[in-house]
Every structure is written in structure tokens, then in C-alpha cells.
Image 1 (tube, rainbow, N blue to C red):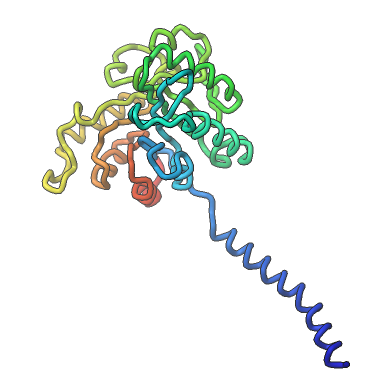
Image 2 (spheres, one colour; image 1 turned 90 degrees about the vertical axis):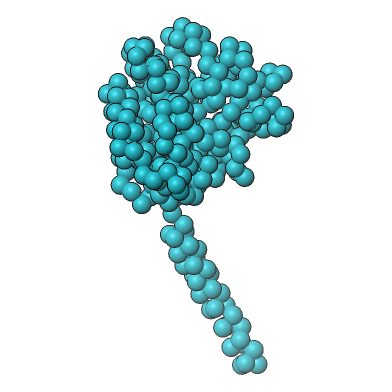
Length: 282
């Protein structure tokens, strides 16, 4: 009888200790699983091709993602080629709705207390019709989007930039927009305001010969100077710089980083994330 009572007492006393141990283990695990460091120069090129569009990039700390968009039967579908499109893979389902949910959970930002996330929308279908549909869709998410006014930019949790087939005249005629225009290097001569063209993007292969291959050696001095001059000129105008089709490897990332290129294109999320975390933020 005494033994039974003792066992009963041990059981009742032991349960709180088990609970305490489980709580300690949970807290230790929570402390080791830290939120990713926001990497303001990391741009996920063709982000939708990753296993988990948007989420893989955010977990790697990326502050810029790119989505190719087609207007098909009134829907904004995400994909590189039209044959790859699926009706459930819409801009809202893959990007806008998840971002809205995350922002609500993070106190109004994609990364808590972090910078605005750039959502680069590369239009693949007709410029005018696609932008008209995009504008209506984006306005429904206006509470989380940066707005562009004639004399000011009101930065919000997500900054949308329209690239690809761009309806320039249509966008320029709007007094207030929830999306900006992605310019090209030639637009540095245009005199357009940074509120309309806050980002300059261009094709690396048309501007530079160096490909960063194993037999190419280091980047030639004159090309390095040209890259840095382009970045400096872009920054003096109050704009950011992105180059696509860049060599997707550390040697090129180093040149882009050192030149001050604002968004470094990559398909290698883990590689660029590790690279940028090992460098001092610019």
C-alpha cells in the first residue's frame, strides 16, 4: 500500500518537472532559430521558379524578388513562358496575399523593423492591357505598397517596380501610382524624376565583355571602372542600379558589391545569402 502511494506521489511530482524541461527545450530551440538578416542587395531573379516562391527568398533574407507576369483571360499569371502557366499560380496567390499576411504579423514590415521589399514585376504580355489589370490589382493592396506622388515617395512595406513590357506613357500620366517604372541605362539621360524611375536595370552582356569564367581571369580594370562609374552616376541621380544576366558566381558578386550595385541578381539563393552575410552592409 505504501509503495503504491509512493509511486502515485512520484508521478504527480514528476509531471511539472517534465513540463518545465519541455518548455526549456522549446525556448532553447526558439533562441537558436533566428529571423534571417535582411539583405538589401539580394535580388531573387525569376523567384517563382524556386520550390517555394517568395518564401525561399525571404528565409534567405532577400529584400527583392522578381515575378514574370502574363495577362491571360483577365488573370495575372506568374511564369517565364506562356506554356508553363497554371491558373492557380496568380500574382495574388504567390506574392501579394502572402506578403499581406506576413506584413500584418510583422508589425507592418516584411522583415520586422526591416527595409521595404522590392517586388519587381516583369510584364511578359501586352504592356497597356497588362498594366491596366496590374494597376487595379495593386490598388487593392494599397495599404502595404509604396506610393509615388509628383513630389514625394511614401515608402511602405512593399515597393513595386514594373519591368519588361512597360506602359511608359500610361504610367507617366498618373498623378499617383502604387508602382514605379524600371528604367534602363539610357534613362540616365532622360531627366525623368527618381519618383518615376527609381531603379535602373540593364543587360550585363550588352555593357560588359567580362563573363567571370574560369579562363577569363579577373575583371579588366577599364570594365571595373566603367561599372563603378555607372553605379556612381545612378546614385547621384537618386536611383538604384540592377544588372541582369550577370555571371552568377562569387567573383562577379564581389565586383558588383564593391561597385555599390544596389540589387545583385541571382538564382542561387543560398550562395548569395552566404556571400552577403560575410560582408559589411553598404
